[in-house]
Length: 430
Image 1 (cartoon, helix red, strand yellow):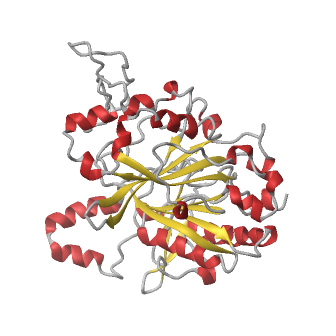
Image 2 (cartoon, rainbow, N blue to C red):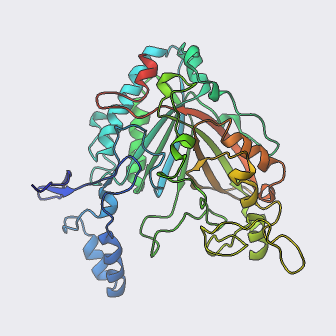
Image 3 (cartoon, one colour):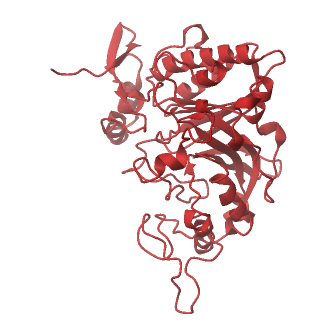
């Protein structure tokens, strides 16, 4: 018996058009890997000239939904989406504070509303009366939405006894220059999608759905390279031009689940299959960085800029030869190189899953770019993940003089919602 893929109905202008939707599993890997028709078409149109390109983009011409738009992540599952999902090209991070008079019951109603709207949006469907129609002609575009609870959430809802030990505030670091107004928050939401309008629509829907229960504390937007922009899949680059995330742990590797997701041992039961996320807004001092030669930049990082390979040789994924020296006896990978200091074996085995967005928020009055990284990292316990790594970096990372940590947050992210549940239900109704 043949199986038909799920589909979404789009208004083609002359009727309803049913198009296949590619569903991703919980790890974010597509069940089918297809070359998007947009990539091949773009090459042909570029060679043919502007007239053909305009005609192909005319509304109602019947251009099909490409694989980029049809990618879909599941809302229900063991874990929330947006943790192990592939990086998306557009993202928003938003923190909310509960308003006066909002307690446990109102918070539960809010999470129920948010979960119901998110499930529809991730399936490529409108979010009922809360949808502003910005993305009505788009597919789901790999939309993911992830929810977390801050330390203060438990005080405001009377759930102090359910607050995890690992959610204690992060310690101060000497490199911190934190803006408290853009840090922390009762609730945290991460939105990612491969279409800017889909991502914005999801953010706006959720903000409208808060009603009087919460208000926005801070919001940050970021981006990554678009899928299909390179000839073959490559690790992401940051705004310093460096490949970023080479040593990320990957699903299926030994100890991945143990490093990233919470087990039931020693944790409140509602956090089973959840994770802890640390969020940092890290400004890159690009004017200073770009004054360095490429060779100096590579020594700061410990890897080649061109392909991410360690300075000791090989390819991006080659093991770094930490004791290798040059003809004069100097270490090829400097002792304070970022890639050396951040290694798990230099930090008592501390492992974090990095999932970042770049950002650019304009220029300061003197022309200095306000740009850098929205650093998002996941771990089963920040006391054994982010904190020991950042303490080590704080004491001697060569990269420290070219970056500035300007905002910070730590949130408990519960496991995924089962069918018929909303995110956080086991906490709020347990």
